[in-house]
Amino acid sequence: MRNFFIFGLIGLAVIISGLAFAQEESTESITITTYYPAPFGVYNEMRANKMVIGDPDSSTTPAPDTDGVMIFKGSVSDPSGLNDQQDGALYYNDFDHKFKYYDSFAGEWKEPGGVGGIPSNTVIFYNGTSCPSGWTELTSARGRYLVGLPLSGTLAGTAGTALSNLENRPVGQHNHE
Image 1 (cartoon, rainbow, N blue to C red):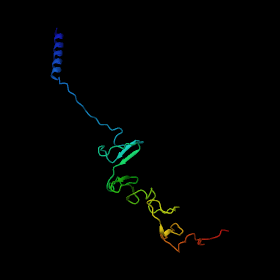
Image 2: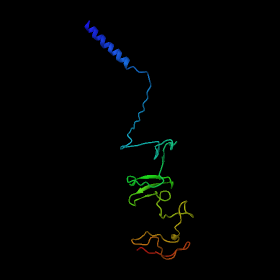
Image 3: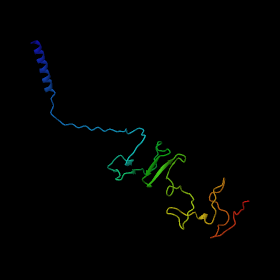
Image 4: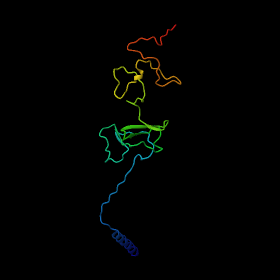
């Protein structure tokens, strides 16, 4: 009887404690944001169909519609942070509407190449009556032999008179024996 009484008291205590902690039924929600892979770290390989660089807000810069397109949200001036200024750094200049890369040897941001990726001031022979779009003629080379710059030579220097149309001057003529 005594055991029955003890078990009865324990049962009554459990029922009362259950009533004391009873709650109304409610709905809760929790949002957990995970980053996989982590937002910082080293990746052996990274692939994406579409990408936006420089603006994490999708309401101001929506993702491209086409696979393989990357959008750079740039800066209106050259980045000045020490970690920005290293070889291989690339950004889009919104003011100039051009890409720029950092040249640590020169210590400055530069535009890649002149026209079509060819460096500015490059002299190329072109078989045509006019220069391609974006190019200008090196008029000082008209009718002249172009020679590479000798050690301590004068850049863009000229000597003698230019050849006339279809002239066959014996300048530089020599024999081999």
